[in-house]
Length: 168
Image 1: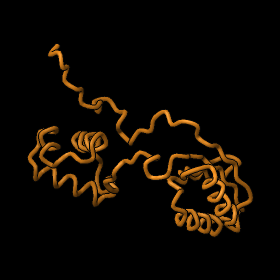
Image 2: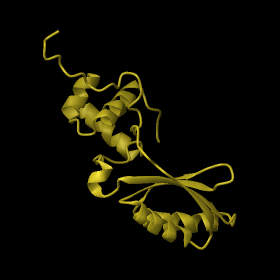
Image 3: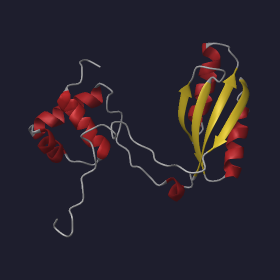
Image 4: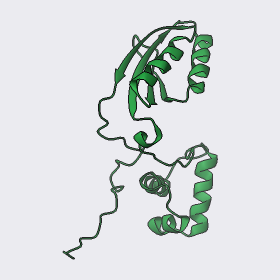
């Protein structure tokens, strides 16, 4: 990143976190800048890798991904080569949504989403077949209470309130 983010950058990021489809015009109005100035800022945030993309948020059940699980992976302490092998294999696995290197007895924790427990078992078989994997531990999610995009929980980024139909 070429420079620190200022208050306006943070306001734009919070606004996009709340609604990634906001127009440049709406964003400009929310931060009291011109549209070209906001467009320039967004392009810089994209170029600097702060904004990595714009995505739709799907209901997991509607796309055959209603079963979520967290899987702890342990693998050979073969250094960078082992990690590279695991990284490459996990990137090829479409049900793997997140991969986190962790401290402790486990090497990675991953989040997966699949259609069913049968599909989870099949995914785990593929993951366990990675040559350097020495063990896994799986926790199946019973219910997702909530998932929050980055910055959405910051003060000043509450969803717009619906107008009171009674006019109160």
